[in-house]
Amino acid sequence: MSARERCRLAVFASGAGSNLRAILAHAERNPDWPGQVVLVVSDKPGCGATDIAAAAGVPVFAARVRDFADKAAFEQAVLNQLRVYQVEGIALAGYMRLVGPVLLQAYGGRIVNLHPSLLPAFPGRTAVQDALAAGVRETGVTVHWVDEGLDTGPVIAQWRVPVFADDDVDRLWARLHRIEHLLYPVVLGELARQWKQHTADAGTAADG
Ligand code: GRF
Image (spheres, rainbow, N blue to C red):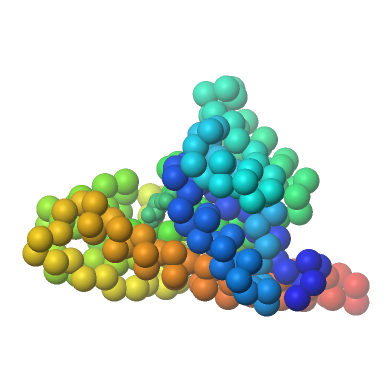
């Protein structure tokens, strides 16, 4: 698949970046994967994800929100970069911030997130701890559309993961991460194919 045929993706991350690594590795192993990560955006300069991006030769935009007048100004700076890199779809992968109106207006319907629970159960940052504390026997991983809420957008895909009696947070996290690394690149590839098709159809309509 040529670069022109691939959907240009941005990955947003604030943390270790293991999902970013999994997406990049999946793309590398599968030449027909319909996406291409053209930009990594982070609100935590120097986090693991930005190191992974730099090592892979992927351009990075990393800046702290507090260095801008407000969140809208930060998002406007992000949006400018998304436009420079002609980004067509956005995958949040451990981006620890609510997406605000500036980005939602520009990319609504083309932003997805990955969450370590079977939403709507256990939204928020402590999903894994909350599942353990609740004593559930099963949790999972969700890919969902991003809206203005905290992990509230419609579900796209879910994968169930068992919780064992002797699990602690680290063990459960490790199991969830393994599933995330398998699920997210596959779902993202399918979305990338759809987003690209949509762009192509819009182009054809404009031409006609
Ligand atoms: C992932 O487990 C994801 O579910 C959550 O944040 C975590 C990011 O992990 N939203 P990593 O930075 O990709 O390793």
